[in-house]
Image 1 (cartoon, rainbow, N blue to C red):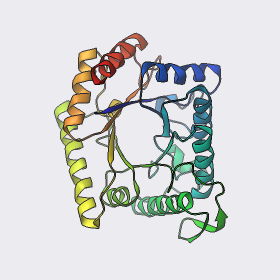
Image 2 (tube, one colour; image 1 turned 45 degrees about the vertical axis):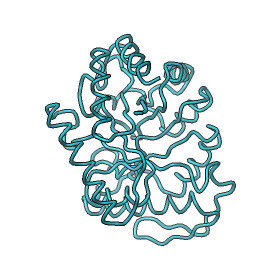
Image 3 (cartoon, rainbow, N blue to C red; image 1 turned 120 degrees about the vertical axis):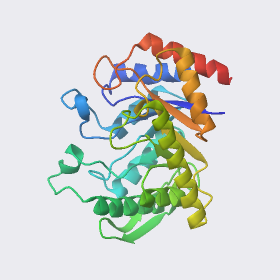
Length: 295
């Protein structure tokens, strides 16, 4: 059975934001996520809040739905602090937090701390260290690590994660090195399909891209001798532009994702304008139609 999740942008951390997360849980979503950027696309000049703090608000207003980052960025985060925050969220949510990690995109996030933008090779190296060190920190009571990009000296992680050996990691990856990381460390593999211009491919081509990426993940698992992530998640709203134009449309798309082997499908909560703009009524009707079919 395919689990349905929702992506909520971190634009309202107060009472309005709490109501959005509670409404998503009431609708029946299995999990809910938020983005981790300093600013993002057409929302760059709009209110935009920290992802992990936003999820702390969401945790206090919900009780069942899993919550996660889609995905934290090494552009401005360090594994030690990220792991400490993840443990706090794991406890605050009663064991419902999922830490999603990505490589970090080029652009404003990469320049935000004042340093030079890393090359693709340097970004891949940094991503590998970030995932590896974060995994170690979440599993061990004390961790020492020496890398090129990150270091840790006898970092203590009491009380540790509620879930053992650690809370779940979701790794976003489509390139060869990233897929090897996902094969070795991830509980959930995350993709948005084509990464050059998400959502720009014709629908048939977009699903062909998902199929190729999923096959490459399976190849990476075979090459490393790893079982690989038991769950595969697609952010559908980055793959096709009109995912909930009708209830039947969303049901068809979720079914096609399931046929491609995806265990989890995420759709973006509608915004009034700009990226992910949509009609809240149409969104809720489509979501309820899909969730009723899975009961």
